[in-house]
Length: 78
Image (cartoon, rainbow, N blue to C red; front, side, top):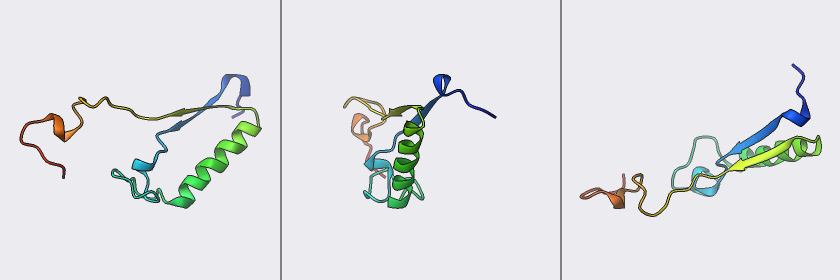
């Protein structure tokens, strides 16, 4: 399958310290050690050099977001 660089974007989703093992994040995903992050960086650089548009996302929640245990009565972290 041929990709049209002008119509193709690469999305890098939530590569941040909290989700990685190498930064000892609070919500680490399995196999996200330093070599994983290095592969993401290298792939992103290579695709950008080839002309692909790169987009990165980072999840964000305001302090009063429902996902935080502190916003629920009688709850504690697991």
